[in-house]
Image (cartoon, rainbow, N blue to C red):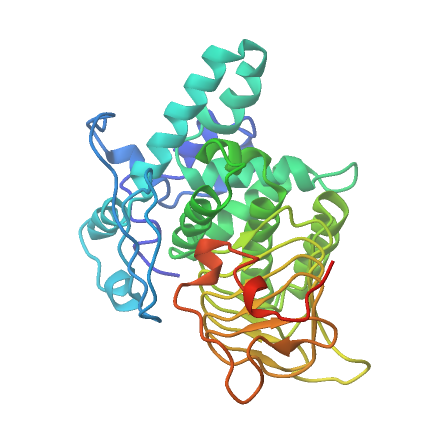
Length: 365
């Protein structure tokens, strides 16, 4: 385990003191967490946080988002070389702290508007020391049942966050993705507390870390609870990048050997599945910037290349080239296989599901 852990001079017991799960059992943690606790000044709420994403994988045009929170890419080398609190500087540079403070401000505003929500927002956000503890607490309540205690889940989830410093960057990337791409998302705290696609994705991230550490039984139990609670079934072995939007998310199924790139948008009732009883590498590989419409099935170990778009209700059994649009059952390329029409924007960011209509000559009502 890294000696930096989460880089804060404060101990995890600081989290447990303010958490509703404060008990003696959790005091075994005497390691660092909750980076923002060492920040001595309050950020200026009037300071602009507008910035542009940097996408390394494409030259496409990117849309402008008016309330985008500043972020720059993180490198593994940068994390490994942090010393003397450098990881705290990284968190500030990546916008994690700004986003957390913004969520707290949003929570306070919501409580002013709806006092009935005071205890809910207080326990979930306002008394939490950092985004990690808030997410661990919220997920532990959602996924617990009469036989699976919420305090035990909280301890398990916080342990994962402490061991994996980079996990929080994926969480914040997903938060931004939802806020930027989903017009139904009114605030970051709204997404964090209420969007089951976001919550299911974060639960999967934790389960995947446990799966990778060999803790397969508990990760499979998490998969089952996520499926029961959020109606999203993601195998903990699946590999998922950052900046993911699971829009509505109901009925999403993702198989064990599926791989999903960065900045991908997937709508409800999408299946990334196999084709039968074949073992081994048997599930789809989704590139960066891909948009997959509602009700789509992508079956088998096929590749959806970077920047491709899959129309709603399609059944994809073969590779889809980069920057093309596939529609129908079985799916076919807009413009034809020999000379498909190329997209000039990142479909997962524009969320445009109908731009191909004028080029689909046999679409008739």
